[in-house]
Image: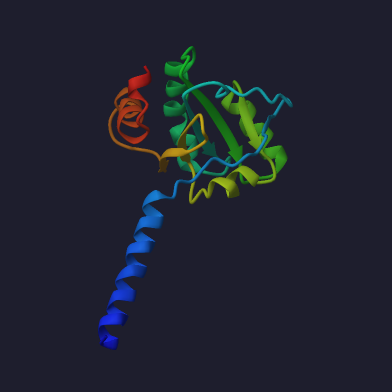
Length: 168
């Protein structure tokens, strides 16, 4: 056989193998136990079909600007039997994290050592991730949408970015 043919065949096979690997590779949620600022480890996602985590940082202006969206999404799913929500704060001192968690109110989990952040592979905040009961990450979104009123942005996030509309 011609060596050029063999090299071309090997190169094509390697490219195919890499594409196949990355197409089937699915990232899973990190196995990290987080506590709230009050020390509770309540898990709103336990036994639910989907879980939404929103990762925020106290110093992040976009995180603070996203709070009306976060609160409205929490309100919409408050009594939902299929979707749980975790609001997680991190990437700062424990004092600032606890203060920010108290500002947000409700059940807010504190990523005091950054394990959740690193395990999830967060690239920027705010960071949104949806996973299923097997902990497979189904959707991710970094940042916050802008333009329009809160209700339109909430609908956009729930239906278009996070694919949770079918559970409302």
